[in-house]
Length: 538
Image 1 (spheres, rainbow, N blue to C red):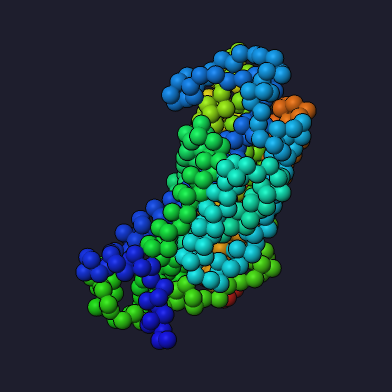
Image 2: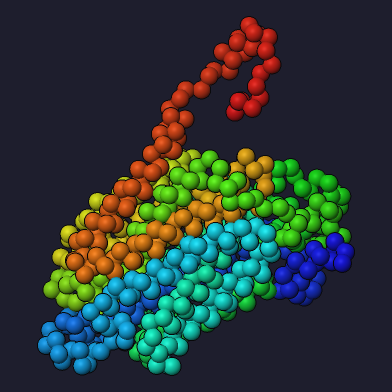
């Protein structure tokens, strides 16, 4: 097969169809908008498919004290007053689902969460290296369709009347492996298409897909809960599989795959292309022009880096360890906030199971603002570590206030919940997007963007260890009281901030150091007769 036909094979079929219909190509700007939109939809569907387990927790393991009546929000009131009934009557009416409705129900639910996240964390390291080796578009498509299948199979346990714990455990483990394909792939694609200029703000806005996915997943799972908890898994599973088809049809993993120079190229790729061809590409009029060899280094012609080499990039290890504790906090809220809201009296009232799931979406609304704000601040200050550490430090008092005063009234609960979401999701979003992309295109790699998926996998894979530990520990600690859970969360946020202390000091030192005046440098040069070091000039 010729090199030109290989390049054509890498062009998504949907783009080929659009070109044939329009008779001309899109501009680079249009393709960037399309890449942003498709990757946004893709990862939003990943997170949407993770939310059902948190929504159905209170159905699988119902509260043995109270029973919910009335219509859920947004149809009825958000907060529905619960009437206390006898323990025996409630158990008859709300039996739950074996094997999760026993005295160790919360522990089993925690084990299900940790099984998913442990496999997700392990799979992340493998997926990152594969993402830098294989076609990112096909790799991402496979992961999304596989995730959809096994998320839906978990829900099928309801219709097949399966009460074997091992079945649900295995479904979550395999789903976790497929889910690991998502984050390294989408970050690598975005890093390939966008340079470092305003990367924090762009990725902060783009990273809203995490919260949008959580919100949409919660709403979808809660909307179909009355038809049986199995539908709460099947619908999000179908959503991510459909998004996988969209990725296959329309997502170009590299600009070079469709004839443009890469955003992270160390030298201008288009410089070796004839001037008239460049003009045709930039104006969007190229249809079947012959691409030069400099434009053919797409998904299948680059060499990736190893895990050990990627770990040696300055900043990778500190940010990875910081993310471990940051995700411990974030994923505890992701998996347990709806359950906490349904079990906590707020202003003398309780929320129903579905209302708690819908209400928990406000945490993610705060997370959207936090991700954008953290990205914007880190761009303005040019200080990623300082911004992340500041947000994690602010998360500690905000969580303390939420636990202490969140039960006073519905208004205070909502306000404090959104503030916690802002400070918890802000650094989580910053590290997993802009920081990972920065380190994945670090100068020590000589502009080799094939390290993007590997570096992203190392950082997010390490973080996912914390994502697994948080929900697992919560399953055990919640039996002793929610105060113990919040102490764990605040300690985790403190450790996350301290792990960045050396990088924060380095950034502050760099900002406070006075630059050497140019005239002083010239005097020194004339006195020594030495050749000036261009690499130290700015």
